Length: 166
Image (cartoon, rainbow, N blue to C red; front, side, top):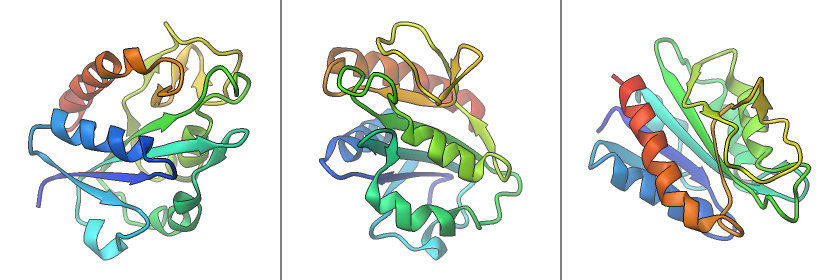
């Protein structure tokens, strides 16, 4: 077992694809789990969590996370860290871009140290509750409109996480 667990919920496949890319960037140092199929017992001993979700509708959390997040939030996070990525559509949902990240954040931020915030630069959207004081609370990605920026954004983000997950 590695120290890093990548947990994702995916309806259309994009979050699953991003989770696999994150796993690849950790070069064999991370295990990956679909929240629809994992148990808390399987993940409770990890030190670091990378949490990935898509945003559905107007800022809503992906369905599989809806059922899993309350249980996950009850884990003992003493001495642990978590990072969040969220997918969204910055054009069609410009006023709620990647807001599922905020739903996850609100559920766990007082229980675990959240790392992996990124500057709100280079994104095209109107507003998001996942931005605070010029920083995203995690990594937002748009596979619908900005897919050409995903790889670079992921590489930079995972580099940040590698420094935090020590």
